Image 1: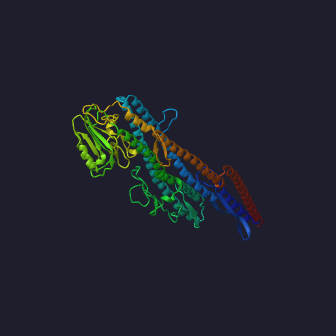
Image 2: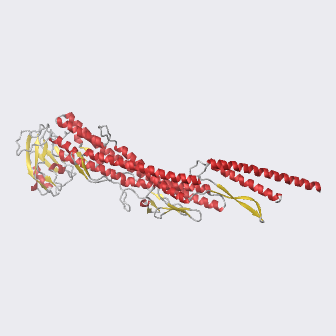
Image 3: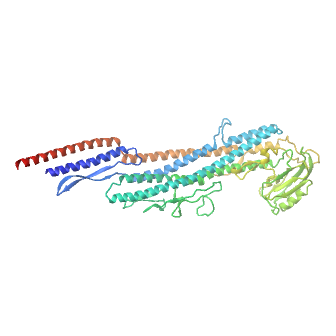
Length: 590
């Protein structure tokens, strides 16, 4: 071997080792960098004229198991979904409060209803007590407040989910744009023979972040581009990034829904290039948020609404059988009607005028089967001495006492009105205790809550005939109070809704079932999250073991390379010395 070839070999070895040392040092420095994979400086033997002339570094690469990466990407989508669901259901569970089987120290709606039961029980022992009536009204208002606040909080969670969708779409677009940009850089560097390994690491990290938000399919094209699609093939990244569009709802109520293809106001779809891909997102954070917003939380709302509407109906059915003392000057219904509305009714209703002490002024018993329309019934009521009736501008039946200091009292007697055969007062909502179309607006009647009207705890005398001047209302009756208590505690039928099976029981029982249902969902979500986290960690650890940096191995490699570099340097010094000696020998012989 000539000294020139020997020196060339030494120089190439020195240069290659220097590159390998640099790569090993970078591996050690970036061992904790997210997404970084171990880099290797690949080298090959240089041959000139059939003679080996050293080594050449042909490139810096990393080896990533593509199948393992796909498994990690899929597991990351599942974890993103499970994490989001667990977070929201934990918050929902906290919102519903806790129950205690041993005492009344819980904070759930079931406990608040139990407190109302207790207040009515106390009132039943002393029905004429103003303070106990006030306590019962306050306990009922606590129930109403908790129903409204829980409903509002559920809708707030839906609004948060909708806002999180918008935020996640922004993150998705950032990832898509980054991946498209890295695709261009990778092709550019590959064309100039530069290493693309670090850029590929960044692209894989962006891919995993994208997958945590939504499930995607992907492959690497022959030109090096990472091409990404939705589950059904809608392009997200090909030659460029196709970003998503989404607009969060300005206001979210129980009526706000997502209706694909509908032009009505509500939640918008997630679109790309004008195509709604909402249904194509089946995993990842966004999929969980859509499910929470459109299914899980509305299911919780439907359970709460059933509790509220059933409770309102039961309480109002009882309160419409009673009257306060003194009787109210006027009664205005909550049901909407009109004079031309057909009246399907039977039985008798008693309408009376009484003074402040509950003594009779006048009355009449009306045979409801005699009236074909609400208008004809109003005319008949107007025919009662001292009574004025009308349909107000809101379409509500209003009955008033015309004499100063007098009031209106009603006994539903045998009346049966409408398809549900409700009592007369109950059908028109003339003496409702609460108002509600659902949990969101459940409220104690304003005049009772303010104290300007008393609880309707008395009943109008149902004797065959009444005599003017006699007492027909007694505030000391326990009939209505006991009926209110029974309405709360007796078995009520609740239909299946929101994933909760049909059941019968007291209102406190049903409230407890709602709380238990949410707790069960939260527990299941927590278990799912733990399982998905374990699976994702397993894939991440496997990928790290396969392509990540092993500090012990890299440190040993660096030490070996440093020794190799020193040896190459010493060899080069020897060759240089031999060259010098040869030159000196040649010069001395000439």
